[in-house]
Length: 151
Ligand SMILES: [Cu+2]
Image (cartoon, rainbow, N blue to C red; front, side, top):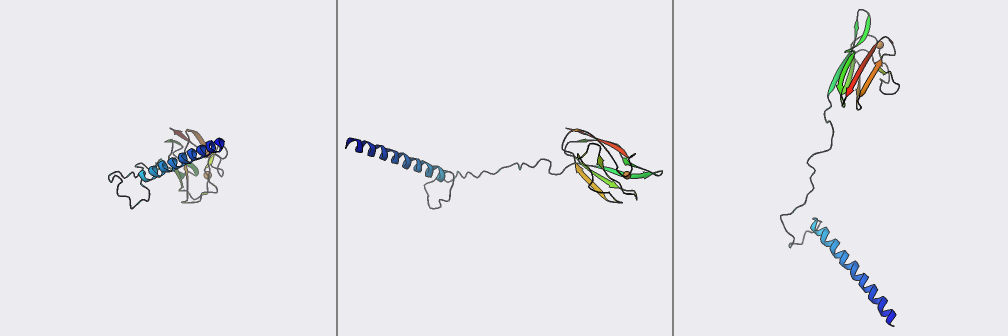
């Protein structure tokens, strides 16, 4: 009998624990401005609306650097042949010549135009890591240039 009582008491105590926990949770929810519309006793001024002031969007408008592919005295070249940019800069190559070219990183698969860039077409690539990036044209292997990216 005593054992029964004891276990009953223990169970009721834990029940009270659960109830108080639920009460605390309800209070916290109410305090956080839940959907409680009818409760008028809540303090009015505090409206905790977490409005993030700064949207985490790094470089919303990337700086752009232009490289032209030109023909001069029958030879094609990237202009400028050496370009210094900051990390996050987008480089746009424009083919102003009448021949097709590629922009192909010397180190395979770092960057490169997926196909030939024909006349007046562009290829864009944004450099997100610092380093020195030499590249060339697959159609004219003598066409060489380098982009240096600093942080
Ligand atoms: Cu070329």
